[in-house]
Length: 226
Image 1 (tube, rainbow, N blue to C red):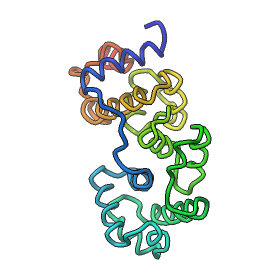
Image 2 (tube, rainbow, N blue to C red):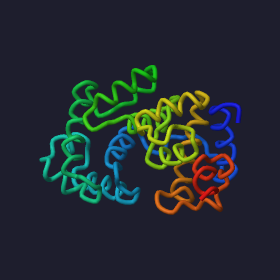
Image 3 (cartoon, rainbow, N blue to C red):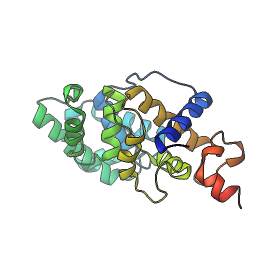
C-alpha cells in the first residue's frame, strides 16, 4: 500500500461493500443528540435511549431538567452508567447553553466554522472530543470524525493509527487520512463501528471471516504468524 491514506480508502471501500452506504441525514434534533451522546458514555444504545426517555418523562422540558435536583435527575437517568456524574454535567451544560443562547438550542453551530463549533461544544461541562465531533457530523454534516471505542480499536488493529495512540489523538490522525467529505466521514465511522461490534470485537475477534484481513496489521503480524 503506497500510503496510509490509500489504505484507509481501501478499507473504506471494502467496508461499504460489506455493510452498505447510508445517507447522512440528522437522526435526532441537535439538543437531543447532544444530551443523548452525553448519556451514552460507556452505556449500551438501549440503556442510553431508556435513560433519555425516562429523563424526558420525568421533567418534560430542557429548562425543567436544568432546574431539577441533581439526585432526582441522576435517579431518572439510572439506566445509563455513572448517573451521579452525568446528571450534574447535563445540568451545567444546559445552564450554559440557555444562559449564552437565551434558549435550549444549538442550531447556531450549523453556521460556525467547524473549529469554532468544536471549541464551543468542548467547553461545555461533560462534553469531550467524541461527543462534540458526533454532534457536528451527525447533526450539521461538518467534516469531522467521531472516534468511539470500536473505531479506535479497529483502526489500531488495521494499522491506520499507532496501536497505543489514544482515542483523542486518533480523531486528528484519522481525519488526516480521509477526505474532508462529511458523507465519507460519516459512513467510515458507521461502518467501522459495525465492524467492531460484529467482527473485530474486543475479545476473540473473528479474524478468519474478516473481509479486511489482507489489509490488517494485527492479522498479518499476530494471527497469521501465530
